[in-house]
Image 1 (cartoon, helix red, strand yellow):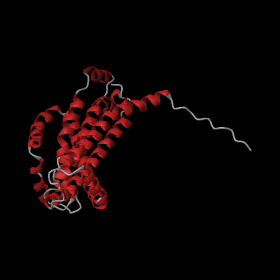
Image 2 (spheres, one colour):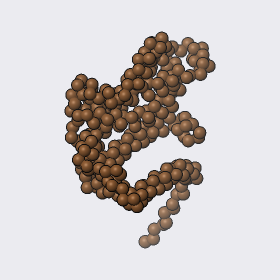
Image 3 (cartoon, rainbow, N blue to C red):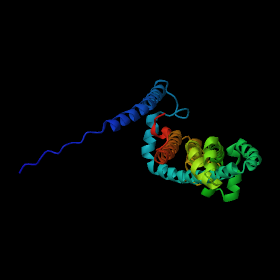
Image 4 (cartoon, rainbow, N blue to C red):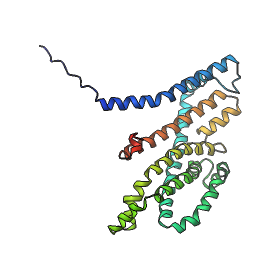
Length: 275
């Protein structure tokens, strides 16, 4: 019994071109990364750099493998704090921006206080939030992350909501559209590129805020505690391995926001890569 050969469908030319373009976009960054790691390894070995100054990448990778269970549990613990702070800070900042865009006079009264709060070093808030929510409570670290992401998202969202072309507003007024309709159909769609740009910045800041908040008092599972404790005990490979885990988780959160942007804004030229 003979079977007919199965025809292999060729990859569409447009899809192949898009995949090739994406690979071309990523190749320079990947090449620089590999070159930097190789240079790092070579310099540490050539000059016999002590581990307390800078461990070799191979030693950090070995520690990542050996202490994977400890680092994984710490990464999950800190990542939940970062996610919570990211969500709280972004929601509050977007809601505040919507209110300030609707009532411009309120914006003029509130923005100086927001700028003043953003000027305070974030590390100064950590002891305060520990007293408010408890040093071993995740909420205190979420509060640090939320404070850190609040201002960038607020400023960018407000800029997007108020940077609408007057002709678009006038067109909606000619159709007797109310403020809510103008907000939903004109202001928010126009502000989405600004909002997603702010969210991508906030995704990295949230991870930084969670780790910084853990430096004072936190659970022994937390990455911030592991980094501080390992450095104090002279286990610098473990400290660097924890830093790598925090960096990878921050990149993962950034990539998730970028993917959401692509899925939500397929209609925008910037999301399609046309510009």
